[in-house]
Amino acid sequence: MIKLKNHIINSIYTVTNNLSYPKKECSLAPPKNNEFGDLCSNIALILAKNLKKPPLEIANNIVTELNNISIKNIANISVTNPGFINFKIEDHYFQFEIKEILDKNQKYGKGSIGVGKTANVEFVSANPTGPLTVGHGRNAILGDTVSNILEWQGYKVTREYYFNNAGRQMRILAQSVEARYFELLGRDLELPQDGYQGQYIIDIAQSILNQKGQGLKSGDLIFKSIAEDTMFDKIKYTLNELKIYFDQFTNEKTFYENGDIEKFMDELKGKDLIYEKENATWFKTTSLGKEQDRVYIKSTGEPTYRVPDTAYHRDKINRKYDLIIDVFGADHADAYPDVICALDALGHDTSHIKVLIYQFVTLLRDEEKVKMSTRKADFVSLDDLIDQVGIDVVRYFFIMRSMNSHLDFDLNLASDQSDKNPVYYLQYAHARISNIISRANDLDLPMNDQFDPSYLTHDDELYLLKHMVRFPEYINIAYENLEPQNIANYLQELSARFHKFYSHCRVITEDIELSKSRLALVKATKIILANGFKILGISAPERM
RNA sequence: GCCCUCGUAGUUCAAUGGAUAGAACAAGUGCCUCCUAAGCAUUAGAUGCAGGUUCGAUUCCUGCCGAGGGUACCA
Image 1 (cartoon, rainbow, N blue to C red):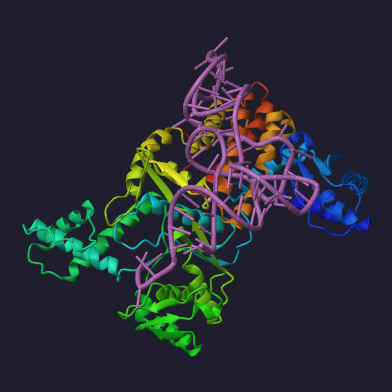
Image 2 (tube, rainbow, N blue to C red):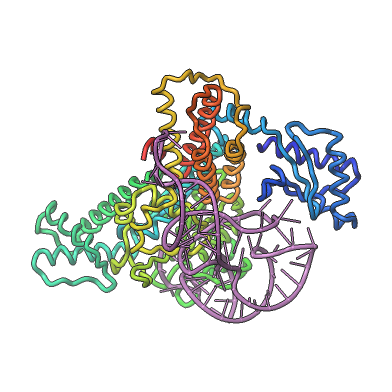
């Protein structure tokens, strides 16, 4: 379909060139109403202004010329108000795509944009201070699915998790565990100010007591190290449940230990972008066109998070990825431009860094907003949600919405909604096809590879086929936008067309030749569904 | 105050500047002697307000109203 579209567009340009019309970008897309044909171009409307002629007249001129050069696979070209040019594609073009799909199978739809290139996707990056929340879920699934989309274009993707186990929050976590440990030994509870209140803190304290006995002293490093290990185990477990696996975990501490941060600060000083004020060290962001300067080193001597973040991004640049993607929540929207700004100032090319900002999920319980706080343990863990509704529902819930939308998630309706989740609609299509195929196998029909796709002339067959052939196009769209919901929308529509076909056309009938063709059609549909599911990370059930 | 994102049906969400704004859930009505009714068919229902650009605006621009986030020597 992509090839055919390019061919038509080139033909349009050839013709407009012959007519001495100026060359203008134009669209070529399926019209909503299929009575207008299969593809539709607005070229005449675009040209109308330049040429100062009615668009209908221009359209008719172009069509006359197009008919003279006769484009392959085009059955008919027509003009409709206010000046659209509509192309009707010959049925056999769609019918024969089945062979292509069956032939490429698991590779059908793969793009080649990233072949031979590498990409790094950083996501989740939650510090190990508590279990992952529903909020982290959006990040995790978005990052993983974007990684899948890149892999489908041929990129070699590194999924990376960046964390900090040396900050204030980790200290408080350790102190909280310690307080619980001594509480278990009978002392009064002395939680630090802003201490962590979750049950999991008590669990960790209990397990430390079981492992290490009663002899630990206040301030023992073991509290922190065990707390951290336990939290990371929990986080990884949750991610693995969601079928998310990281290639690399990077500790912020690395960049202090290897001298990168010192070097980074020295270079900024060398460029006169650093100054001292009120006992703190500032980065002259204003001299680079920003609104205000930022603190880099606090008066306590501790660097702010911007410093290691920038050093970390420089490290990623130095690792020579062709594409670097960060997945951040809306709360980071203001921070990353400073990181980019500093890297630019040091002469790095940052054009291959893309930052995806997703909006927060608003959780509702009894019509009330739930304020998420890991510290106060007022959160809903991702684990609980997975247990309640299942992996596929969780993944699809986040994938089917644009990352720009502020989501509302009603916890009371979570399990209720899971029964009616749209993901089942897609999976049901796959299960139905699987059933047909196994039935055909049982019946021992002469279902060899020989079939004649020209039997597929029913409206619902062509309607299904016409969407099937657009799969590679949607893969590219999803790559360009880095928006997984493009694929979810595609699969939803594909499933709808399949279910429609299924209700109106029997696959296995007395008519052997037709049955063979229809079996090929549903096998091809199944391939596309399975490939789409793979990108989205949801399962392709054989039965439901 | 300033910056970012959003505002679409009763509800939760879709829609490369294109023709009649799509689904799902909720409400109404049909369809299982026939490959899975987690389905099909069908009725009703929406672009916050006011301008502008355009042949054409849910989409782009301006203002207003409303929501979320940021504007920290928190990350």
